[in-house]
Length: 211
Image (cartoon, rainbow, N blue to C red; front, top):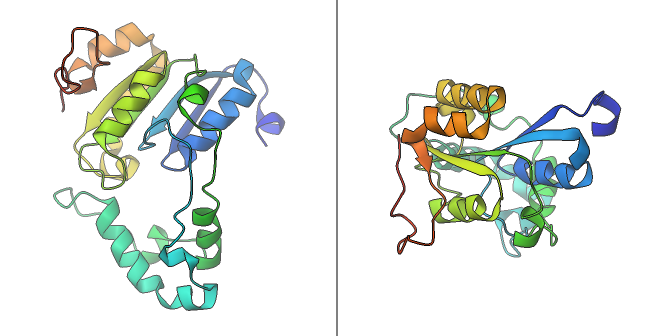
C-alpha cells in the first residue's frame, strides 16, 4: 500500500499506539521515501509479544459476550479522568468486530523491534506521550527518546488517546515539527520537552519538564 500511494520521497509517517510499530517498520523498509516520523503514545524500543494468558485468549463467541465490559474498561483506561468529557459512543470508541480485535491483540508479535532496530531510524522523530497514559510509562518513552538518534519528546496533560484529548496541542506540535527544523521546533516548544539525558545527568528525570 505504501509503495502504491507514495509518489515521491517527501513522506511523513504518523502512528498512534500499536501503529507506531508499523511506522518504524515501514521506515526501515522504505527509508529513502520517508522524511519524518510522528510517533504518538508508542512506548519503548522493545520487541513486541502478545500476552499468553489474557482475555483475548478466550474463544471469539465467548469473548463477544464480554464486549460491553471491554468497552467500559477500555474507555476508563484510555482517557485521563480529569480531561474534558469525551463524547464518543461505544460504537465509535470500538468500531471493529471483536474477532478482528482479537487477531490484532494476538498479532502483536515483533521480535525484530528491539533497541538496535530503532537505533537505525535516522530521520527526525516527534514523540508524544500523555502524562497520565495507563499503557505507556514515561520511562519507556524516554528510553525510546534516548535510543533514537534524532528525536524530541513532548509530554502532554492527557492519557493514551492524545489525538482526541489534546487535539489542539497535538496539531500544534505536529505542524511545528513538520514545518521547521528540529532545533527551531525545540526552542519554540521547550516547556513541554523531555530532554535526552546527558553524561552529566545522574538521574534520568533531572531534566524533565512538562506542560
